[in-house]
Image (tube, rainbow, N blue to C red; front, side, top):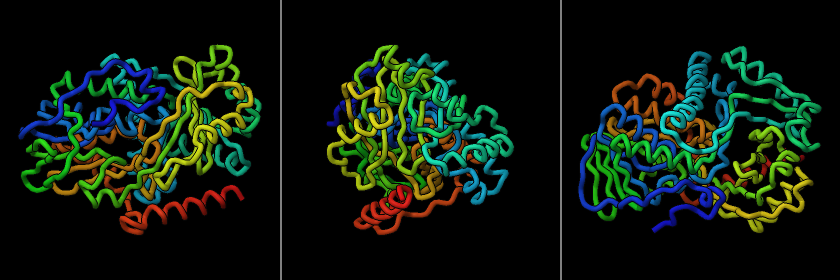
Length: 425
């Protein structure tokens, strides 16, 4: 049996939640959702609000995976640049995708307000450039967002103004996005689970799925029972396991890690982030950080493509944090934790069908806080018979990672090492 929450700042500050029963015996429903993270819980809640009978099967506990461990950053757009997306699907569908990404951000505010979810939701996001070539990207990016996609909440900030937003000398410029923001991801997910149950959803925890049937009468089996349904929705992402091998070939579980300092106090917090923004740089191996509600620095940087935690993680992350903020040299590290996110080769969400009765959504590639909400909504729409918006997402191309089960991770490690070395050079 999995621990309810990993040992993290999020786990230590989680809102109270109750343990749920595991599946015992055979049951039936309209839709069986696999995975109780952001995506699966949104699919379930949306369908329950449409009057469908929904069951969720979770291998561990609700929000046990990436939904309860991530950086909590609400980003605009996609991990892939919009010019790439436009090249893949054309301008009109790129605009539709941007609009749906914006809807994903609105869904968060809507759910927090409607269900009174206490998750420390705040707005303000900064993309920070620490290299001249990155600074050169800023104005064209903002101009494209505004002129092509009608987004007017972002603007370029110069080095002098930036110094008033983030107390470091590292950055040369940035983009201040008033439409982005941050939240406590575990508490948001737990709130979604509570809202789903209030709408009639049955959530079974510690019920890992061992087999599925995607035929005309689909089912999902666990060690102790089986759910028969009219539709399946697979939302396990990086924690998919071996249930759907074809889906697994299209995503890669990538390890990410975060440290949380001791509470800095109002004065100490203002010495690093006086405006309480979420911040991320533009490097390939990004650093990202924000303040918690109790004024800790939450700092993440880099990823592990090998799925093996890097050695001396706490000390390495502390050094990178202090290199950026020397004023935190004496701050104690209270928590360090990690987990896996699912990335796709194209760095865009991977939505599709395994059969007419089985849908999936995965591969949010670092933008899962904002994009999982709209992905869950359009999957629910498709199951309910309105597939137009789902099919726009499904137009995005997705290629499998090369190398097969044994070689794809080593090949990815080599490729990412080369890209990182090239960036450093």
